[in-house]
Amino acid sequence: MEFVTQEEKDALQAKLDALIANRTVLAKRINEAREQGDLKENADYHAARDDQGLEEAEIKRLEARLASAQVADDVEKPDDMVFLGSVVRLKDTDDDTDDLYKLVGEASGNFDADEIEVTASSPLGAALMKARVGETVKADLPRGTKHFEVLEIL
Image (cartoon, rainbow, N blue to C red; front, side, top):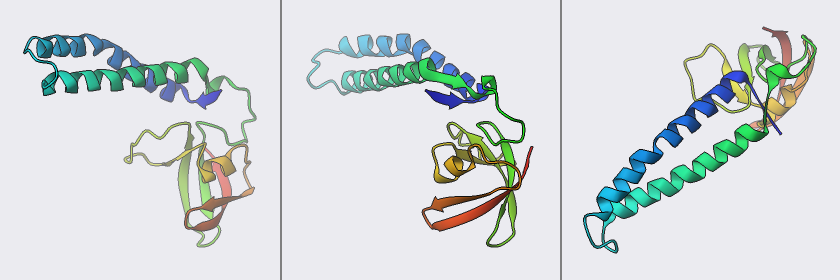
């Protein structure tokens, strides 16, 4: 079972819906390329078939993720505990700087947000999961071990 936020689940569903809607476009591309003749040397046909295979694999992957995903908002948890979807202010104990972090199931790739996205499967995300205000968490990061104090949960 995978925990996701409602926003992440909606994004996965939208991506799945778009891929399913694109099936007819790919089928049309394949038919048009097939009409060009010899399939052994037909680059358009092979490219369209490759695209179709990749998209079908992605559809199956998304369907499996959505089938096993549980929305974290539906899980009962204490208000003072970091969980998926939480935005927390962390202080780096080495240099006393603080930043906002959002614990997510899957990174959105949005770098314009006010908070830094941390996936639950990352070292910092795993360390933050179920932490409480006032606690210090230790994360074994690629550039060494870091310690962060949980200042507040927003």
